Length: 380
Image (cartoon, helix red, strand yellow):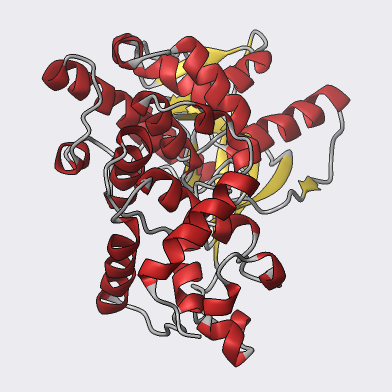
């Protein structure tokens, strides 16, 4: 049996209403709350997002509250989710909505697309789920469902357009929000990348890939980028029990808003590289010691080996907005990268133990950004 998009709507919606997971953002049609959930769910799992979404909505319950907040306040609540540009865009979008739409999130797709950080998927999700507009959504999970239903192979712009054409045909009709969420839910819980649960699928009889017995051949496997090994040095500067952090700098290989001062090390001594970076970026004179620990951290296809270098400042720290001193216990409330958090933990442990000599190596699980890796769909 070949899949007909028009015949798929009813079984998908029935299945979704019976089997959908009880997620907090599914208990509301508030477009602002749904917008926040979509921003958080990008590249992050549902399990990781739920407590962040709950805390964020409690602190910033509406567009006006978020627009009135400082970037630092927003990033503090985002710390641990990673990809901090999402938080910045969300705040900037709230400011735009307050200015242009009096704090009311627009229902029109084009108006949504004009907001910072809102792409076609997010615009379609907000418009369909919050406003009942027949706007399509296509993400990684939806693509996998379509690829198997229609035995679609290939990549590139033309293939992408095919997915959106199917999504557009499907969403036309009653309950567009439930239809879109049924596709995301199906991809997240049933039509999974490996070992899909075909007996549980409401449209299994229409699936061409299942008919061929080649479910896991669709979609075609993506070509992974080769892993790049990068050597990094970070400065461990402590004064009166406080740690020196630097605001994100274009030359820093780390991804937080605030991190331990860092630099790439290319064919030179790590301590010398750090001394040069601090002098040129912050006008700081500091003498390096021997490395006290090494941590490893993976960001996408980049594998970082991070040497932690204790440094002694010469003179006073310049009064500048790009530097700040923090107590060690504050690190969890500041928008730092996961790499910096690891480095602080390792250096603190090393310092408190009073050990000397051989550098201690810490191996941590590879993570994507600073939150658990997702299957690429906000419905996970």
